[in-house]
Length: 269
Image 1 (cartoon, rainbow, N blue to C red):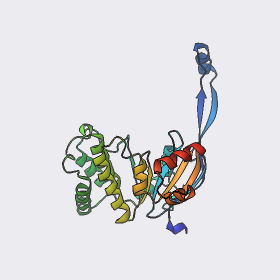
Image 2: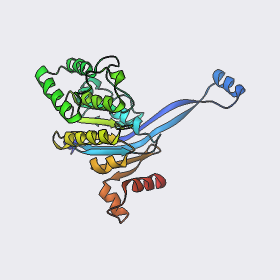
Image 3: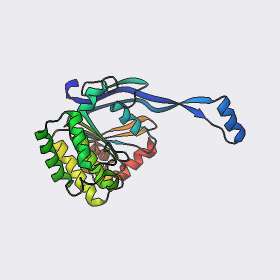
Image 4: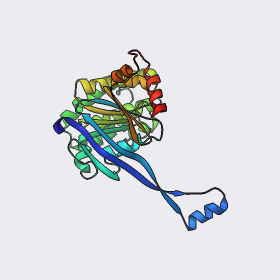
């Protein structure tokens, strides 16, 4: 069973110590002299498995703990408790090997060099990952065809639109051919045409390349079109884990609107 899992998280929690500040000048001064700290539980005893080749949607309201969970799965954050394995490795203790086995796209951030043309960033990443030039050329040609990069990838990243930049970030995340891809709201701010282009690209990555994809999104159309399964996080806990079909069956409505179903889950979770 373990050999079939790309992601295996068991009893994972993450808490942060935060300083509590009262209102008013006197309370502000007091907090500087004698700071009062409390522990904030962001992720609370989450267990999650994702099979190889599965496309999973990780859903939840803002502040639910989704991004924190992804940061732990990618090795950026260390869990307070619990165990995580991605491709059989512990992400935060085997960072280098883990980085070679995963790709990640965060819609509001970029791994590209801001002042360089996007294609130059991709060439630098080629050298960092030690990708043979022939393989690099083949992948660049494929990404250019599927994501329409050729029209703008010689433009400095700072001058790209959000949709253009995210498409280049997708190419960067997959340049080293990782088996697992993490996507944190990758299509936020995109127009409908570009969104559909990105969705078709992601379908190709799972269907033809057998990649495992974990996606966070607030776009329920993406969930309906792309995902095999959805996991809802609320208050740092797993509130639902199952297929969209099972969720519809539970409501005795095979044609139920995805957004309405998820909204109901938010309310009852």
